[in-house]
Image (cartoon, rainbow, N blue to C red; front, side, top):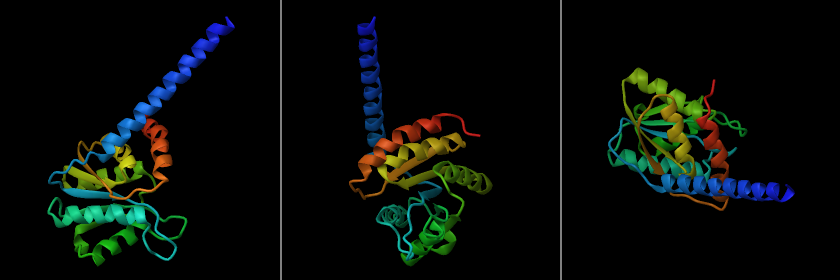
Length: 192
């Protein structure tokens, strides 16, 4: 009986590890496979703004990729979403200022300062799209974050979603990819 439990435990652990490895691979492949088309809005989720007001390298990379899309005519609007981080700075405001400094017209930027989470960003985007009668979006974020962003957007009724991964990576991405597996799974469960 003890041996049967050992075999069952081994197979269970092996199955869980296999599922995690498959999930990581799926997140990475989805994240690095850009889907670009002419869209109504480009969406950039927030990330760290340093205490001095400068953008973290991750956030700057997201905005630079969004800027490339904007300048190439993929969309005429950029939806920046963030909140006030522990540094005390509104990410959406800092993102807007950066884009304006790079030549984006202020009226082409939609600022969402209540994007505390990825799901909040999706909900706020969904409201904005509904009020503006627009139907398509391209999300720009780090590769490991794209799958969860798209899932959150689908949950709020946005179905025409493209994605572009920011051209920035660092060692911490290994942790971030691993963290996305349970984070993505949590978005499969209905939220209140």
